[in-house]
Length: 172
Image 1 (cartoon, one colour):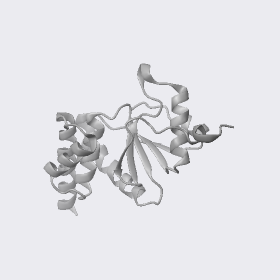
Image 2 (tube, rainbow, N blue to C red; image 1 turned 90 degrees about the vertical axis):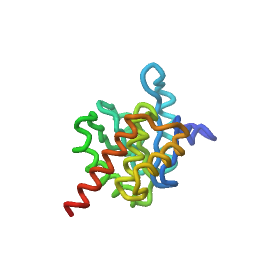
Image 3 (cartoon, rainbow, N blue to C red; image 1 turned 30 degrees about the vertical axis):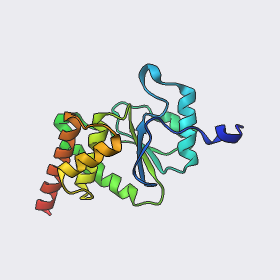
């Protein structure tokens, strides 16, 4: 049994709180592609488990999440659809995310890397839920959180989320 600081694991790469103690993002635990390391994955999963995250949620299509089971971490797989089919899945994902955030335990969402697409997902969530009602404000806040500009794919996701929220408000 590991003792000391190693028993606590290591934080995932690019870990950031979107909503402090409720909702965080990170790079895929253990890395991706040629950078993936099984030992690093185990240490990062232990870190998540020791901080009592309720779920690790992957937005990455085709992700294998079985490694979380063996370390006692609950997970969900919500693959983001390609850009053309995104509208159909965003509303469902954002509503489920909002439900999970209301719990006392934090959740962690990841993709392979903390990319423009993941940043756009975050900005879209902020505008969809009305926490940040304007597209431009959501983009600015997301850029501040990410510490970099939001590219075209990310901006498009924020705009799409705003459109979905407006359509849902009209039909309600």
